[in-house]
Image (tube, rainbow, N blue to C red):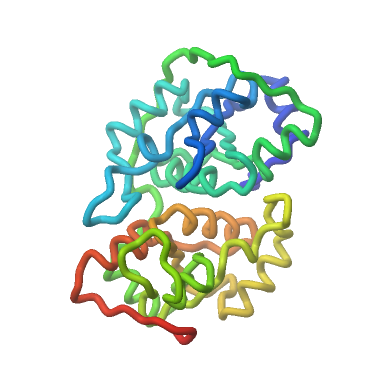
Length: 276
């Protein structure tokens, strides 16, 4: 089962009632996801809040640390997810939040999850209906099994940067430490390599074709057999990057805490400039 689904494919799957779709529209800054959801979403799709369900409270583990398993299970069950369901998640267009949802569900032991490529924008562009009506799903029975995919902590990220490739998905100016609009310290993890997530997206928010993702990954030293981790500011764009690599047959391990966790310990070194 591929990780991505098109709008036409999703419409067919919904007509056959063989998937459940979940809205994860989200903005770090700007209109909150629940407000976007209230305006328009795929009919029948409940909303899952990234900050509530897909991450724990910010702190020393970063701005979007691993979610509390019990709370995640409650939120998924409230969204009507059963243990044997195939799930499709989507956000506005770029799969930023959907990538995080895809990764979290797999971490939680629910591998039957795919992402609507291009999100709600692609759905609407395909002429599919949207609604503001909020569904009331029957409670699901999904069981969260945390740790079902590997995760990097700060020590693991250090080792990955030394013995594999630790990719930093942030914009180049944030990676170099020239601009830091969110976190209190600018720079990057020593040895990490910049591969901006925007370089793997088409202008409409869809992922680039797998062969192009592989080509751009190879340009920074990542191949199918390369040990690779992904990082960003807080583990959201890093999950999106892990999804992009997955579509190209490259398995990556997420550094969930990412830069916002790294800088919580002043003993950890900070690098600025263009060199790893």
